[in-house]
Length: 329
Ligand SMILES: NC(=O)c1ccc[n+]([C@@H]2O[C@H](COP(=O)([O-])OP(=O)(O)OC[C@H]3O[C@@H](n4cnc5c(N)ncnc54)[C@H](OP(=O)(O)O)[C@@H]3O)[C@@H](O)[C@H]2O)c1
Image (cartoon, rainbow, N blue to C red; front, side):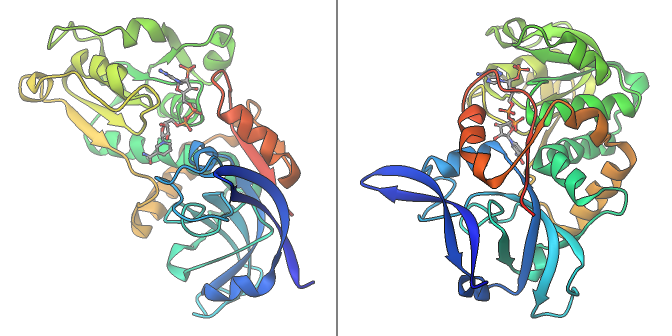
């Protein structure tokens, strides 16, 4: 076979069009390592890339897909052997390098991580960048000294790809988790993941002018940004920690320095895509201890390459719950 299937985004007369195409295998030769993709998953960044967002992907035609698990076909650096099970997530995969919505990818060897033993190739993609981001934030929270005895931890955007994992993993570590959501009818789902209290998104997002409020929690995992992050910081107890990864609720903060200089709050920034390989290994070791794919993946859906277009439409709409995992081979 000289070609392979890929979900491609093309710019045609200023519109971005997505189709499944046959790609020549010779295009794979530019990379050090060729991987046969077993599974991928859909992240919000893939939605943006498929819609022509030039902040994510500069040049088209392009194959989105920032997460991949699969088997080594060949490696010019001899670091891996054919058949080795590996994962690639982040770096420039699916952004400015053709990504995982395809039967094959080719990447630099330095982006490739051996599959963690506890998980199957399928489970690594049920976790994907969402679960990895949650674990990276939790690792930073633990490093800051936060302990279950300190008090509750709030998770915003709790039914989102990252939030759902943060709720499950923080609960598994013994923290009392309070989940913030804008959705109705999700209380049983959040409670099944370990959430002890469910807070309404509108309450947390309402702009508050005061620089500090009554402390309500020891820490927070924020996936929303904007007024939500500002509000979470103002209500965190002394020496607490707030991890931040997202901006679905805006990029601007309305805070003063007081939470930091009077309450000693740690604001922990998360950037999963550029995480050093040594730290990735530590994060996957933490995931092996605390991630429960069986518990979380039941709120997601497994799809095929042909179903990616419809799934991306859903990811772009509000109200979507859980993660799409793509079974490629
Ligand atoms: N920094 C990193 O390394 C990194 C990695 C992964 C993701 N991210 C970012 O993290 C954020 C969350 O990612 P995700 O994959 O979890 O996204 P997602 O699946 O779309 O979930 C976001 C959740 O936020 C809540 N939400 C949506 N719109 C909102 C609004 N306007 N105001 C307040 N809450 C809103 C919803 O949860 P409820 O309905 O339950 O409230 C939604 O499910 C995104 O901004 C993403 O780009 C960053």
